[in-house]
Image 1 (cartoon, one colour):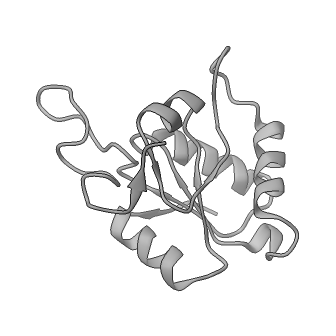
Image 2: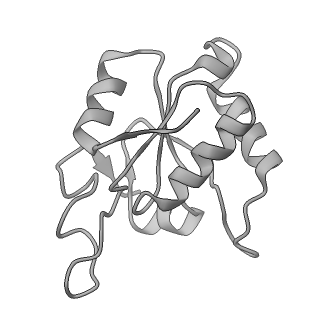
Amino acid sequence: MSIKQYLPKKAQEIITTNSDAVLIDVRSYAENKFVGRPLNCLFVPWVDEPDWEPKESEFVEGIKRSIGDSLKGLDTEIILICRSGFRSHDAGMCLIDHGFTNVSHVVSGFEGDLDENDQRGNLNGWRHDGMPWSQC
């Protein structure tokens, strides 16, 4: 099984039209706080301080706690987002390895790909594409 890939507009369309779909931000606490986050998303970091290493079992348990028992559990449509699409892909593969069956990620992430000046936010990504977000 592989992880599905969505552009931001498609991901937003799915979470808007499918009340069971869940958008989960897997970035670090610092990114979430200082860069902003998609509206109406859950937050479960894939890696974070102090060691910046994935803790798969903690991540999977965090996802299960976040989606709750009222949804379809392992069949819940989960869309992951990170900064640029790499961590969300790895986190999604972890979920698939742990029995989740409906996992996707935002390929350009929240901030998008690097441009010719090594800056994000100018080519693509959740914010660049005008999807709803806030910085709190």
